[in-house]
Image (cartoon, rainbow, N blue to C red; front, side):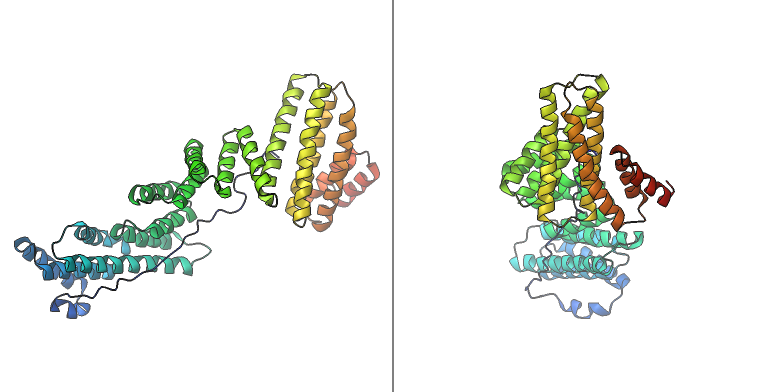
Length: 401
């Protein structure tokens, strides 16, 4: 047992998805009335004609609006979705141009909104139809839909979130990170949720320094956001900045005394410190003084109290019982090694206390999980350490250890 992994719970990116449709009324030319009956090839031929006409009549509002309509319709009818990007780029370029006729701007914005809604809705449908996972083909199709939506509307926070989430679900962390970085470049509001997800993804991908930098900036901007501070503590843990992590966790527990995830993290960090200090003494044959002993036992007391507080808050699940039993047993083992280097004898008494507490938990775990040989072996080891030879032999015979 070292220290807790920052994945305290499964991290799932959460998005608010808002579908809005423009209320603008289309004033397109009569050519649009029959376009639904045309094939993609016929629509493309008409688009070519429009481009030729617009070269000679750039300010023609009717032709401009018709072109935007055709681009949106060709895109929707083109399969696979990955082949739609050139049309959406063209439509986006039209939306970014300046028009003296405000009606043209409104109409193009209408088609922008319609295309964005269509692509995002199709992507979300596929996600909803495959909530537990997608194969490569479906994943690529979802990604294409969201890329199309971002191309036509690069200001959509919801779409960046959805695309990053899709990459994350398929373990493409680099692409998820790039998506969120692009979102920060394009969205003026610099939303905190994007920055927080980016910090987490940096951590997941092993770029700890970048994660810490983003988390520290977020903590400066949002000092009251406990989730962000916990994320920074996790990043410090993985960067071996344990004192910084402990400082944050103590502060969080003081502010939120009923949140067990903070106590679990602090217990893990304190155990890491205890274990590191113990190994330093054991490996160097350093003599443990009375002051050293008090420091070791104080750490163990605090860890034990944290686990007891957790037990009083939530029912003792097998997972929590295992974590606590392993801590007690392993700590007793380190105390046994420290005892040989110690000038005081309190370690042995404390070690026996830890083993007895551990034994109770291993017995419960073994009773609840009789097929789990790992629990049985740990219980056998504790019996041996406590000199309970009959109980140890009974387990040995029963399970053929």
